[in-house]
Length: 325
Ligand code: SAM
Ligand code: SF4
Image (cartoon, rainbow, N blue to C red; front, side):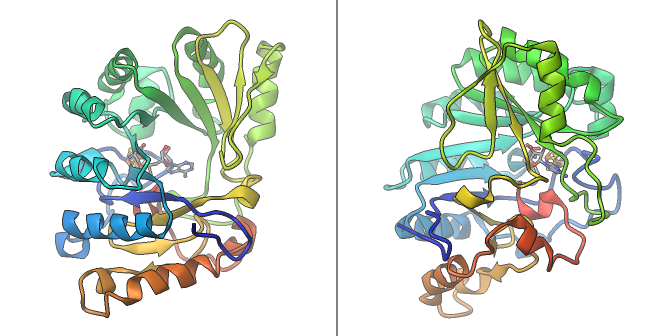
């Protein structure tokens, strides 16, 4: 079991398999001028698998595949097939924009990958187009329904943005009432690849919840696992549920069980931390591969207490597509 310097069990790896994406969500990256990693800079599928094995050997039992957009990288399904048979790995899940997942749904089901998080920030086609800078809504919503029909545990991630999609909050709660889906409202984080810091968050978790309560006064709080970042609720009689994720307010750091590895092999122990450990030279055998486990262990023994402590050192401009959401 991997336990960090604050006594938190660290068993959840978010593994980014690419920094590229076919969308350009406003909160994630600029429309133009994003310099994606060269192929040689990205970990190969074999290297990603080696890393996954090492982490699982050290106590990670849950891996979420993310990006960038995982499905833009050729070879994802073969990688998942290998991962699905990795002893000790109990849970594989994926975060995706669901534009390209359609043809793979049956295969994912066969691999027992049951939990898929889909980014969808509006139920209005035009608004999704404006937010993602691509006309993606019809494909995404069709794939969301397909995933539900195939019995996946589907969560929709909606980043709440002042002046942009506030009018979507209540329709999304209705959507969660009518479908067996968990809609999660995420506070917007200052990671759009262009600017950081000094941001005043207009729509925090308290305000989001207050708006929902004003329309649905009888909502019930649901029990949540200790390490969940989402505080979940249900409208009585609804098929699904909704949650609020205080990604900016960071009220969940005390039970954080997650670490991230970027597509270039950088280990990051907090979303808000500037420091990363470059695991690539060890995975590639340029530096002593034996050092891999001890480097991971050392990083986990020097985690920040919370995202506020980490942020004090954050000076460079970041995007979630680089960090791995
Ligand atoms: N492309 C996939 C997707 O969009 O689901 C996976 C990668 S994306 C970076 C992972 C998650 O990060 C998405 O749910 C996205 O909404 C979230 N995200 C990206 N930038 C964000 C920001 N500035 N604030 C809050 N969430 C953000
Ligand atoms: Fe792409 Fe996901 Fe970032 Fe949107 S949030 S630009 S879909 S990586």
